[in-house]
Length: 270
Ligand code: ADP
Ligand code: MG
Image (cartoon, rainbow, N blue to C red; front, top):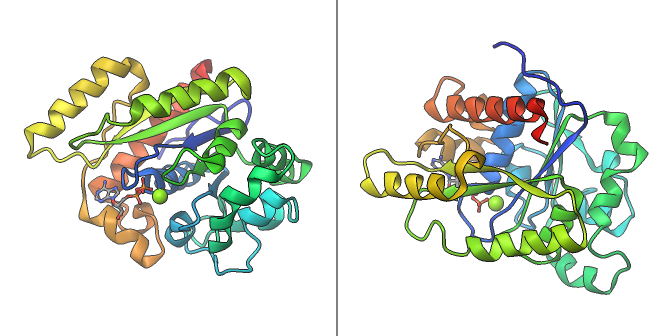
């Protein structure tokens, strides 16, 4: 594979959609793995107490493991919580343990409650790893964890499932992004929309695709992720689809999507 451009400065993308099951985690881990294949150092921050991204990358996330929870509390540095994946020496993950489930409430009474993840990301420790890309995998809610992710990022990546009600709730997500942008992080922008779980056999999938493209224009990646059994099987083996079946359509489509993201960033839109 030919090289992808390295960004001039670290890109931090928050993968958000308060709807569950739209492909946030799948997209975060597979895009990160695709960039790592091209030699770009990439970190996935698992910000969902379910720990699905940690599972997919086969990173230990039993309760008590240094995780994003301790990072938010300021007890552990991000670099100390980051584990290298088995898949690639370029791919790191800060896991989420079940302890994170309490954080949404615990954060409320903490100082700088919205910017704790940002603080952790800007620390010298993370500069030591020298990552090019950070993907923050959000929980399916718009609470303080997701706000932390939005404050810590420059970009929001929204996965949209090619299904009924795909656009439902998107208005709420966009107005939350707008609020964060106005009050907490002026730099934040929706840079990328990724259509996922596309099933070419249904008319509906095309209707949704057209509707999303009409509405969001060039923000939507040209690459669409097909619905594929390989993609859904891979996490069961503690692998991304790129490792599980590199030649599959799912793997290729995530490679294409990652290339688009990298090339867009290089044009200076980030
Ligand atoms: P979220 O993080 O938004 O809740 P996930 O990424 O966990 O969503 O995806 C939800 C479910 O759909 C998971 O079981 C996942 O394996 C499956 N899935 C995601 N993308 C695809 C795809 N392209 N093809 C088939 N199954 C998929
Ligand atoms: Mg998820």
